[in-house]
Image (cartoon, rainbow, N blue to C red; front, side):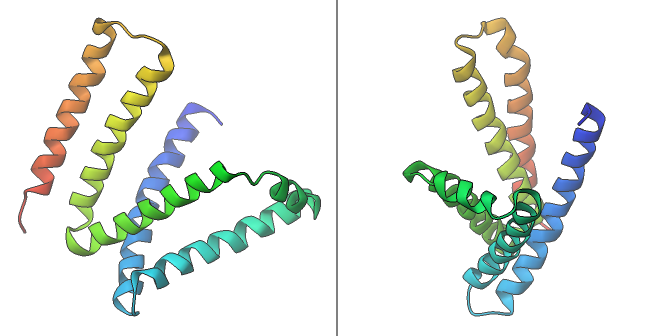
Amino acid sequence: MSNPLTLLCLVLAGVGLVIQNTLMVRITQSSSSVLIAMLLNSLVGIVLFCAFLLARNGTGGFVELARSIHWWTVIPGLLGSFFVFASIQGYQFLGAATTIAVLVASQLIGGLVMDIMRSGGVSVRALVSPLCGAILLIIGAWLVARREF
């Protein structure tokens, strides 16, 4: 995928996430638990991905899936489920803008730390611009989080 197409995909995913979380809050409010919304979300994804896997690889795809299961392969699912749970709670109790601001700022910090660790050493000069951007994003998240409507 080209860079412009990838950026468009990311923008659409970001807008889609706002719509998804808003609808998941509505499901949570009309049911007995946030778990109902999370399970519906997961079930739709599982059915969709199983259909794609079956169409692409036939039943051999499920054999490969079974062989790919290791103790550590559950960690992304746990983290993803926690992200969805935290997002729903944030949307419900803090609002969409505050939730998004805090999530984006924390993701940027985590991403910078991960990139620095993977790079094997970064000069201080190379860190100035990303750190300034992170500080500005943190300040922006704080400003959004403290606003009152």
